[in-house]
Amino acid sequence: MSEALRRPVVRGQVRPGTVGAYVLLALVSVLVALPLLIALSYSLMRESDIITFPPPLLPVAPTFENYGKVFGLIPIGRYLLNSFVVSSAVVIGHLVTASLAAYAFSFLVFRGRTLLFFAYLSTLMIPWEATIISNYMTIRALGWFDTYQGLAVPFLATAFGTFLLRQAFLQIPRELWDAARIDGASSFRFLRTVVLPLSRPALGTVAIYGFLATYNQYFWPLLITNQPLMRTTQVGIAQLRFEESLRWGLVMAGVIMVAVPTLALLVLGQRQLIRGLTAGAVKG
Amino acid sequence: MTRWTVRDVRSLGVGLAYLLPSFVLFAVFVFIPLGRTFYLSFYNTRATGAITTFAGLDQYVELLTSATFRTGLVATVLFAVYTVPVGIALGLVLATLLNQRLRGINVFRTMMASTIAISAAVGALLWLLLFNPSLGLLNYVLSRLGVPGPDWLIQPNTAILAVAITTVWLTLGTNIIVMLAGLQGVPEEIYEAARLDGAKGFRMFSRITVPMVSPSLFFLFVVDTIAVLQAFTQIHLLTRGGPVDTTRALVYGIYLDAFQNFQFGYASAQSVILFLLVLALTLLQFRFVERRVHYQ
Image 1 (cartoon, rainbow over the protein chains, first blue to last red):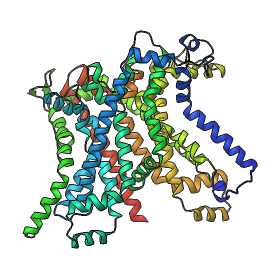
Image 2 (image 1 turned 45 degrees about the vertical axis):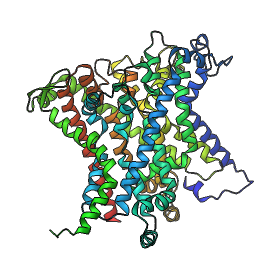
Image 3 (image 1 turned 30 degrees about the vertical axis):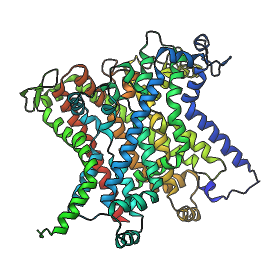
Image 4 (image 1 turned 90 degrees about the horizontal axis):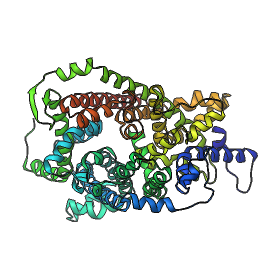
């Protein structure tokens, strides 16, 4: 690796080592992505092709009929809608609650700030699963089973997002704040007109994380939804696994439809995702 | 204690106003539920969750003497042992491979990191097919290598291994990206100096690279172990805790006792244990980071 680091890339010049590196990278990439590639391939196969031996890798005669059949078997359009509604609500909730809190923890000075900051920090040590029984009872008492609010409201605040935004806000020069205060701007107006526009990349990271985490949830929607039309994508496609006869082409078509939005998000928001992960690693 | 001026009170009021939405949410859905989990763990409950009688430490005593819980703990430990070291090692090796200055390297980075975006439910369904003894690719490859493939999800000794393999794959994207960031943070001069001293190849890797990225390795050790402790979805979709409780990891046990057996007090005691384990791991991480900062 150090070899590769030291050696500058010279345009237009191909070394044998470089070709080898590309071949190795391509092989390993395909291997890592293989479960997904197989799913894509199987989703295009007829059931009769799938059950042949040895297991086929590529469809002989690609067909989209599995995708059509999934729509007939489960209301997957509705599942996608539910997941998008809930995930969008959580993203908006994260952006609003985390920017307000991060602003208080960066620009405002008040007594007890450090103590409150530690209270927020402590939520990172509490696994959601350790509180799930009590939250289940709360949602039941509120009569929020099978509702969007039951799926979204418990997740509207984010400690991780608050810390990420606080880090971004702390990068903003203090002089801007002083100048705005001298001009008589209210603290809220400063947040709205200066801090938020300058923190767009960090806000993007918070939004992408909120969306991915919510869209990919399984345990909570499994617990609090019973009506078929209120299920989210993850719980919905998992049903295909518990069907009487497991039809793999259908399952894989469902899996692909459910995974495409998050994979698109990965490709489009790669930079933001990486920033979020590495912030966690570096800051602990 | 210094006196509170009018300005102090006012600035506190403004600060709290900004914190109010998130604080209310944390109070209702994190702090109070955690308190209630502790509370419930000292009581007997009805199937509705209503409290009946004070149980003291009975739930904990029952847990520690329960063979099922012990089997579950063994499953959790095996799960972690199979998942965490392999996941981190793979993350480090693949990140090293990806840490090259090549044109188009980002395409490979995106492909290898793709599991970040994959949900546990999708991942579990993908591997369910791969583990299938007659249709799955895994046993076909094994048979070509002359190894008879097991019936992964049915055999007690391989079920937890199958859950672990799925989990390694699911966490691989995160592990690769964290390790890649760690590798990129190593100053070039250190490699230069080591090279002048005659280090190269594997020696360079083991003596220079690995120690330099130890903070990232430790971070992943904590994060991946916590992820194992919290695992639910892949178990629910692959094995449902079976066969004979061999994949009944901690959170799956909580799910079964609370939402299938309706023993909320007993399940709360398990939740307390989960909380304490995660707390210990997080504090360990904080201490490690602190120490590193001090010594620098």
